[in-house]
Length: 266
Image (cartoon, rainbow, N blue to C red; front, side, top):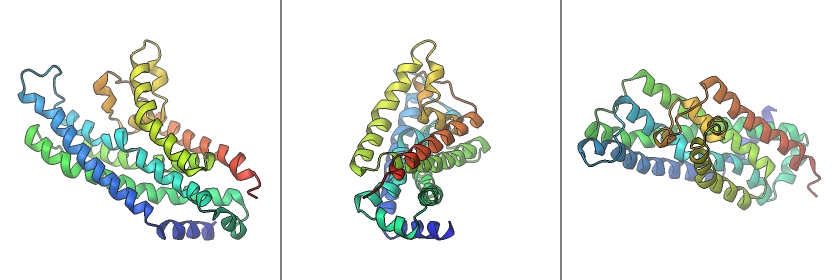
């Protein structure tokens, strides 16, 4: 197992894609942080605003939590590339010749996805805080970086990002065609789930269904939800949200092991 993990780390760090995606995530979240911090606070001085601005610590946690709400496509993509990259470049056969135990290969990839997710979590969190905090201090009533609750949100955001990367790795084992996996991840994260969360939250009796969607579960783990500002304020308890995310990761990994990684690769 140790040799398989070292092999996966070597393959990961020998390419540029992992740090290119991390830089992209940093830049994207830095931009989103500045824009959303301004949007959530500028209404405080605008008497014509139709919606009251989010104020105080709630504004800070809402903005910082956007790492999950809008940035989780990056760790999902990074995790999926750990598997789909092997199939795209046809190196999976060599990997299995060196380590024929397919379960060990998949577990090694899942283990490597944890430090990879940590890198993405730190990149996104640092990016959004670097731009949002000054705007919150300027336009709002403070960045609240001295608050324990805010730091809890920031720390759990990193944890959620790690789990997203693990989920992405499991998903990559299910859908190994790289282009298809990228398209599915982008469509789901940018369109399907956001629309589903808003729509389900607006229908009586279906709000409890929405909280089990992966993005909603991650919000529950973090304890902050941008969608709460859109009327979808119900979240799972942190422990239940963590279990839901782990279930997604385990489910994808199990399906991938029993399907894709069970077949003869030819």
